[in-house]
Length: 235
Ligand SMILES: Nc1ncnc2c1ncn2[C@@H]1O[C@H](COP(=O)(O)OP(=O)(O)OP(=O)(O)O)[C@@H](O)[C@H]1O
Ligand SMILES: [Mg+2]
Image (cartoon, rainbow, N blue to C red):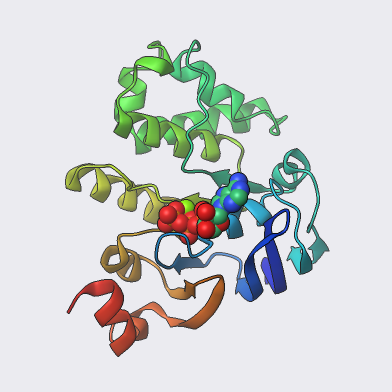
């Protein structure tokens, strides 16, 4: 397993949000984490990526324990976190922002290859490479956040709600780019509200409710599960 989480507890100070979470993602997989607002999805990704220390349990990445490790070190190990909060450098151009994403990549040929791939995936970013990031539209910022993740050549990409606030056409584009990225070899753990699309795109999924995993399995099976259909798919 590339990522293995065992009995993870996490939260904020005295507030425990995650209870005994166990979850794993194999190399090359596309796995989804689904759940209602406030269930603890972002908290799970923050804990994996080192922004939040675990309160208990274990997080293994490629066999190494990364639980409680600082964010920049987790990133160096090959984990990219594309968060809901798009922390762009507003006074830098699109290209400069993308290059900042490559701070862990020393090989300049690899950097160049990654940049070309980002521009191929999101031609709109190429058209705007000299524009200040602060002037990008919401959808373009999302693309940029994903692009910046790609620039770090991650083995595992944790993606938090990439379709939030996007029009359907852009949502499709973002899902397509994640699929392409996965086919190209990047392992993905995706958090999304768009459950229908997510279950079609991922191979397995976990359902998180009130900080606990209540269901998991193949995405195709979950799409036919009564609970999932009623609560998440509305039919
Ligand atoms: N910095 C924080 N300090 C205290 N509590 C927090 C903090 N961040 C989140 N929480 C709480 O933790 C719980 C889980 O939040 P989290 O952001 O993980 O949910 P989520 O599943 O990502 O929800 P959403 O779908 O709305 O993004 C919520 O009750 C939230 O209020
Ligand atoms: Mg969230």
